Image 1 (cartoon, rainbow, N blue to C red):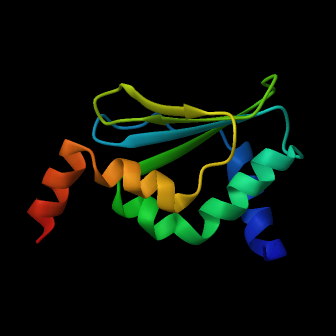
Image 2 (cartoon, rainbow, N blue to C red; image 1 turned 180 degrees about the vertical axis):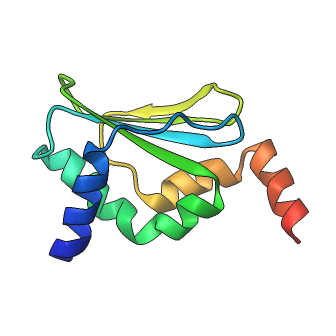
Image 3 (cartoon, rainbow, N blue to C red; image 1 turned 90 degrees about the vertical axis):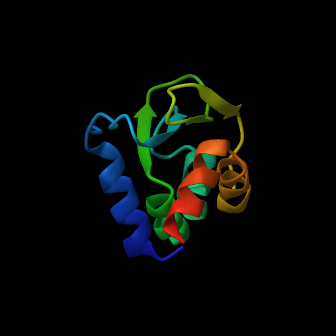
Length: 111
C-alpha cells in the first residue's frame, strides 16, 4: 500500500466517528491497536474500494483497544448482517450487501 494512503486511513481512524444516519450501512472494524496486522490488512483492502463503500452508503467506524480483531457489517435496518474475526475483502463485502433486498431496490432506483 502506498505510505500516504495508509497514513491517511490511519489518521482518519483516530478521529471519533460521526454517528451513522439511519439510511447508512456501518462497517465496524475493531482491533487491539493501530499496529494490529489484521487491522492493517483490512485498511489496505478497503482503501482502493472507497468509491464502492460510498456508493453503498457505508460509514466505516473504527474502534481500538479491543482484545481481538473483528469486522461487523450492520445494515440500514440496524441489524447485524455479518461478523468475522479476519479481514473482509471488498468483493465479498459488496457481494453480501448487493444481495440484500434494500440494496437491490436502491440499484433499481438508480437506473
